[in-house]
Image (tube, rainbow over all chains, first blue to last red; front, side, top):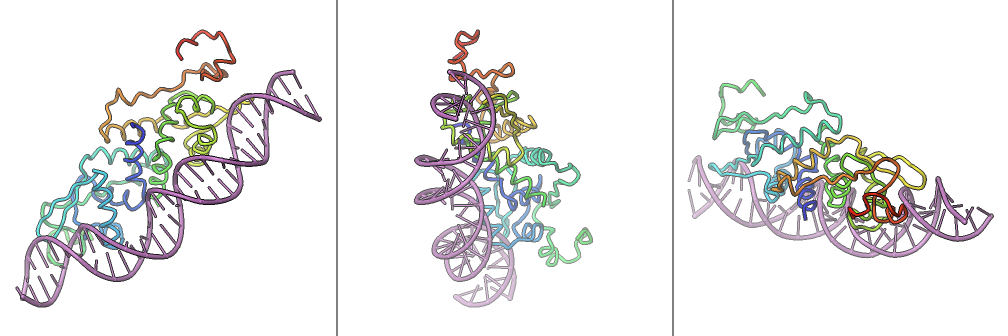
Length: 125
Length: 125
DNA sequence: AAAATATATTCTGTTTTCTGAATATGATAT
DNA sequence: ATATCATATTCAGAAAACAGAATATATTTT
């Protein structure tokens, strides 16, 4: 059924935490610890939501060392969210996609940054 | 909260019956009895879903005689659905928006058509 | 005013989803 | 091999959403 598959995709992102995660991922990729800091939720909770997004085929993950990096599979889902934002009266500026600007293999979240002490853009936190 | 309002909009349409209703409405307007025939669900059920859509601010209604005509408030929600369709691998042709072509005040659903016996486009059913 | 029609609302049991705690796994460092 | 770190999974109770039945309301017709 057509409407069934559409609604199940929508249901997969019809939850604040998952929208937050997708916006935080943006067009980049991020490890769970980054998301933990970015959206201010417990690790287990984020992991759960990531699992839901993974099962819905919305994100993919790759492992690098002990970190697992998540990424949005089809970025047009960000447009979908943006459009949903417009429809619910949110200005485009408010709805900035704050994709993590991570230069492959390193996470810029507070936790990771503390370990990689002295990295160039440390001040951006 | 931004993600809260986005997700609640999405949640409002994250249900097969509601997607069906919105696609059936399309850019036109339709009475409940039309929807009843169009998506093949009981009246009370459709009414319930319409209530949800109304509460979410997605559709508006106007009364004309004993019929109540529903209409999508902002048609760009159809684009949203279309995009969700694409994302879940549904071709555009499959996802035709079959908006009811109703020429103001009369309903072309089987029920209504039976009463307005002899109407021009009766054969289209 | 009574009957009929179109639609809305309320209630209730059932299923789904959320939330949080506890624990498990897999990788690296020591 | 042990410890530690990052992340995943499982489980259980609470909350929310659904689905269906029954019933109410508003409008028109008679």
